[in-house]
Structures are given as C-alpha cells and as structure tokens.
Picture 1 (cartoon, rainbow, N blue to C red):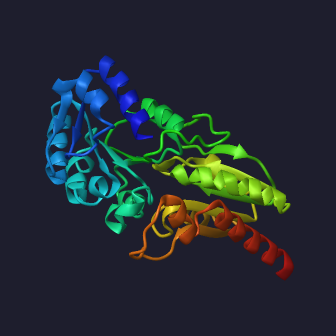
Picture 2: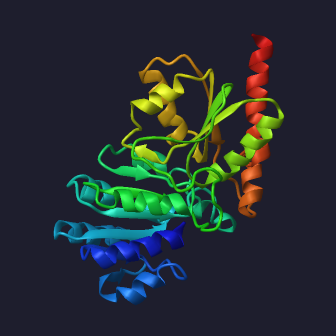
Length: 311
C-alpha cells in the first residue's frame, strides 16, 4: 500500500501546494517519487519522530497539510504525547502514515509489530483513523479523506500487489464494504488481513457455512447507523484484525453491540498475548497467532457448529 500511498500523495501535492511530506529517516525505496518531484516540500528530520510531529504541528498551524511517514510503531507510539498535545489538542490537519500494520515487519520482531496502534489512537476522539485493506482502497481513502478537518491516522500495509477480491477499491466514509453476503454469520475484517479473511470465507463455504464478509476501514469516528443495523442481523459475529483483540476492531464492535443492546454473539480473532521471540515470515506468524485462512475458518466452524449442537 505504501507505494500507492506515495504515488497518490504526489498527484495530490501537484495540485495542492499545502501538502508537505516528512519522514524520520525512513521510507527508502518508497518516498523517492515525492522527494524527486517535490524536493522543496520533502523534509527528512532524521531519527527524531517526536520532533517530526512537532515540526508537522507547526507547519499545520501555518496553513500546510503535513504528512508524517514512518513504521507503525515509530509513527504512533514513540511520538504519541506529541500527537495528543499537538494536532489533536489544537485540531490541526496533521496526517500520520504508519506503515507495516500488524506483523508485516515480521523478521524484525515485536519492536516493529504494529499490534496496538489502533487501540492507542482510538482512545483519542479527536483523530480520524483509517485502515485500508489493500492498495486500491488506499488510493480511494487518501483521495477521500486528505482534506478532512483535524488530524488523521492512516494504518498502511507494505504490500502493493495483493488485492482483496471483491473490494475493488471501494470506500465510503463511515460505512463497511460488503464483499460477500450470507445468513449464518458476519465476519468483519480490518486492514490487510482482509485478504486472509476472504480466503477463509471460501473455505467456510465448503463447510456449508454462509458468510457475510464486511471490510471496515473507518475506525474513528465510529461507523454510522448502517453498520449497527448490519451487526443486528446476525446471530454470530467475528472480527478479524492483525492487532491485539483489546482496543482495536474487536473492541469497537463490542462497544457498538453493548451500546445498542444487540442480541448477537461476538468472537474476536486477533492477538491474545504479547508476541514472543520466535519470528518468521508473515504467513508463519499469521498461522502461529491464529490469523491464517485455515485458522480463521476453523475458529468460525468451531464456534458456529458447537453453538448449533448445544442449542
């Protein structure tokens, strides 16, 4: 998604002179198109993420629309206080791009895993949060939201090649995108793991479980009443996210269910514990932490079929 993000940002910046891009000495083999074409609006602050947000806050106060770019943990956690006290407190249009959501920087280990960023950001009601599922949706979201009032956090993946089947880049602010429709259960996925979720839905069809699969890219502000209505139609709901089950998509859906007294059973699929020191590629880690298509499908089958038996 990152290459698509930068390509789209270049196109937007060529027509909007207010757009500035900042990085903390990261983004090599990704940010060069912006640097080469718009060098006077590209700033590398060095390894200083807090200062990067501080500079961006000043630029936003001066009338610019600054984008700051880094790996998810360095974009969301390291400068968190600066984000809170700067663009959020003053409602300034700083755009934060966190790259590598989930475990995409797999071999780098926990320091580079973005598995709590949505939860951390979502505690602040004053920042909009978007988590595209693939490169095509990344472009749509960026074009649709870069002019929003106040700060924005984008949770981006590294992969520009994998396209979630059926999504076709669609996005509408505050709404979920429906990829498949079924009657037995609803699966809501967030971010790049939506591709694994889509593969799991294919497996579930072989088990005679009829699934509605919805991709939710708007995390904050919470999705609209249409999403609440969607949740109310299904006896079983599953959330899938490359994130801790606390604080992220699963927590968001739990809150909506509780606030609206919906009669449904929710199962949250994500990380339940802190990752250990064992690393490997992303597919290996997804399988290890229950996010592979096989693991997602098994969780759904076990939950739905067990409930049918006990009923």
